[in-house]
Image (spheres, rainbow, N blue to C red):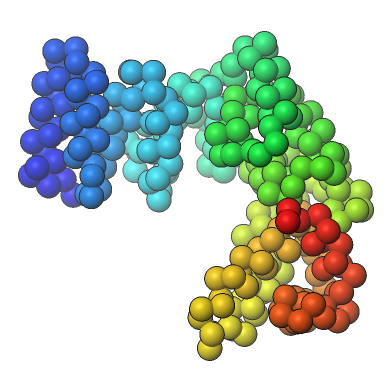
Length: 277
């Protein structure tokens, strides 16, 4: 729904736009969004961000929408924003998820810019969301090769490897990739791999840990956070290392509380050797 005050600000923004004052139009629409959600305002603001060379802000705004596919206006805007940002990899993921060709053509950045993106990423000591998003500007050949090089490097933390693995899964790639998992060189095929949150073993472990702390809600967020770290470190080979999720969850809780991981002691010790202190 769009409130009366938001409609007034939309009118003001339209007037600003007619006069060529894009900055003022953006300010009015940003004001309209403070405290209230309005799809009409969001779509207008995304359009103005793109017109004002603020594609990154348009992307951040549209990605806050819980459903990018059902409403055609949202979907069309999302695709145009991917085009403006040169997010070819995300466009290919979208094509894989929907099974449809996008209504616009998304091109990667120039080869020179791609080389700079990859070089900067490798030089980063701490990788943030914007760094990951920059990799979506690569072409598919460079993205696959670069991701494989990161997965073969044992030094990046598990969060980097997890995010890149899930990007490969969203692409539905049938190539085989190598990755280090707790000092073991493993192989996986993204097209045959589930995202972590959809992995049955992960879901069972989270449920088991949650039920054990249902009586102690103050400790639950910490335990769930640690569980995500541990299981995320085993991705994408969770099934190989977790044969009995309930037993794994019980041993993990014991390890976190008393440092006694029982039958999984060696595995937990290895995982925590690799986690950031």
